[in-house]
Amino acid sequence: MINPTSFSIKFWGTRGSIPCPGPDTIKYGGNTTCFEILCGEKRVIVDAGTGIRLLGKQIMIEEKNLLDADLFFTHTHMDHIQGLPFFAPLYNPNSDVRLHAGHLVGDKYDLHGIIGTMLMKDPVFPVPSALIEKACSFNDYDCGHVFSLDGGIVIKTGQLNHPNGACGYRIEFAGKSIAICTDTEHFDDRIDENVVQLAQDADIMIYDSAYTNDEYQNFKGWGHSTWQEALKVAEAANVKQTFLFHHDPSHNDDRMDEISKEVSSIMDGVRPAIEGETVTV
Ligand SMILES: [Zn+2]
Ligand SMILES: [Zn+2]
Image 1 (tube, rainbow, N blue to C red):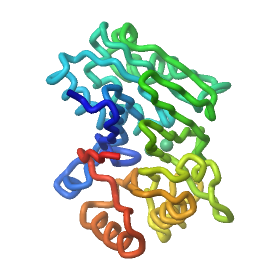
Image 2 (image 1 turned 135 degrees about the vertical axis):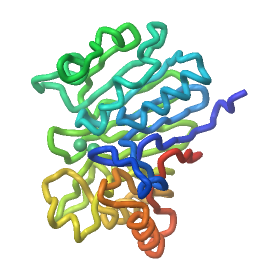
Image 3 (image 1 turned 90 degrees about the vertical axis):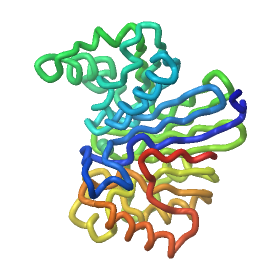
C-alpha cells in the first residue's frame, strides 16, 4: 500500500552533455539526465536522457511495462532526449504517456516534430516514432504555464538561461516542493530571479553545477552554471537541500568527491546528485 502523501525523487541520470560510463564514474554515474518523481501513486518524469532506459527496465519487470505518467522535458538537447527511443513502456500501446515541452512554442520544430523527424527517423534511428505514438501524446506549452495534475500535483514552470531555451520546474505536492533548475547559466551581475522563484523555500533544489568557477571562465555562453552559484541560489531562495547536477563528463568520481567535500565545508545540505539514489522529500 503506497502512502498517499509520500513524495520522492530518484536520479536515474545525473551526467550532462554525453554519457560517460566507466570505472571512474561508477559512484556518481555515467547516464544523462532523467528524474523520476513519485507523488503518492502518481509518477512524473523529467527528461529522457540515457538514464530513462533503466527506469523503463524497472517498469517492464515490476509493472508489466504499462505506464501512465507525465514526462516533462527541460529542453530537447541530445543529452535530455536520447534515451527516449529506449524507454520500453512507450512500445506498449496501452501505456499513456503525456510528453510536455515548454521551450519550442514559435520555434521551427514542435516536440512531435523533433522526436518524429529528427530523433526517431531513418537514417538517424531505425525505429520510426510511429511505434511509440499510440502510447504518447505531445504537448507544447508556453514556459511559465502552471500545470495542475490529478492527485493534487502542481507543476510550475519558469524560463532558464540556456542556448535554444530551457524550462525549469517546481513540483509541489502534499505541502512540499522540488525545484529542478537544469540546464541554466547564471548571470555575472545578478542572481537569476526566475531560478530563485522556482526554488523559493523548496525542500529540494537540483541545480546545474557543471563547472567550478575556474572552469566556467572557459565556457561562458555554453549555458551551464557552477557549484558556487548553486550555493548563492540556495541561500537566496532559502532551499533546504541542494543537489549539484549535470556533472561534467570530465569530472570523474575523485573530482566529484573533492567538489562534494569542498561544498559541504561551506554550506550544510548541499552535495552532488548520485545516479540511482532516491531522496524522500
Ligand atoms: Zn544538458
Ligand atoms: Zn542543454
